[in-house]
Each structure stands twice: as structure tokens, then as C-alpha cells.
Length: 204
Image (tube, rainbow, N blue to C red; front, side, top):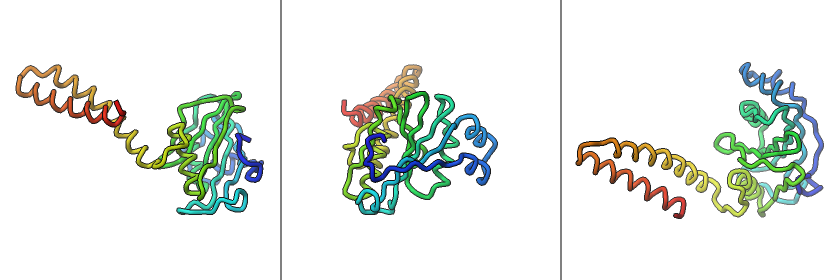
């Protein structure tokens, strides 16, 4: 399934009631389990015993979880709760009406912006060690690019770009409204500096 090796395949149903009945969850999170999720199923276990790739960097196993949704709205709080309850790395395939997107937890819940036909989903396991495989899976979700070498550095860059985009808009409005020449020139210089950093990070 999803292009994964047959040796890692599983078909283990996880009763969703086990999550929201045994865990101490807020009412809003329980509501997402009840009204947002149809079914939870572990479809793959990626570990040395199933794929021959040695554990490394604290990564001993990566579970692939298929989450059938009742609507096309992602139950983000419930996904966070699921990830918190499972003590291993996890790749989640969120599916609704034949379409799917991927999600991982890496410095918070990260969800791919790309929904594709579930039958076209292809998950690549790339790397000589499981930590490298995990990085590759995160790169697929976060950047739709398995070739990213340093996922954490790329994440920091993307976050800085988002910060600068908001800052540039704010600074442009500030200098445009300033009427005193000295303050206007200072605001313009700050704006140009932020804009230059943004363009450099985006490779423009």
C-alpha cells in the first residue's frame, strides 16, 4: 500500500475509543475523535526486522497510520493526541473520499498542503539508517521533496521566510504612513533590509 515494501505491511485496527476514553482529553478533542474520525488503522511498521534498515538516532520504529476521516476537515487536535499516545515516530495518512494527505509530528503537528488521489500516494523509504528514513518521510510531508538533506534547517528557513513576509508588509505600511523625513528614511531602510533578507532566503 502507498508503494511501501510488502515486508513492512500491517493491517491492525486501532479502536478510536481507546484513545478518547482512556486518555485525559478535553471535550473538544473527544468531539474530533467522534465526529471527525471514522477509523484508525496501522498499515505499516518500518523497523530493522521488517525492512533491514538499522535503528539510529533514537529512531527504532516508524509506524504508518491510515486515518479515515468523516469530513475533509483535518481533526488536528485529535491527530496531536494520537501522536502523543504512541511512543514512536509516526507518519499519518489522512484520507477522505478517495483523497489523502500526509502528516507527521516534528516540532508540532505538520500537515502536507497537498491532497492527492489515495491510489496515487507513494511513500518513499530512503536512507541507510532509520533516522535518515524518518528525515526523508518528514521532507516528503513538509516540502514534497525527499532530497532535502537537513530537515530541521529547512524548517527553520521556512519559518523565517514566513516571519519576514509578514514583517515586510508591516514595515512597508509603516514607512508609507510616516510623515517625518528622518523617521520615514529610517523605516524605509529597515524595510529594505528585511526585504533583502527575504529575497536571499527565497533565492530571488
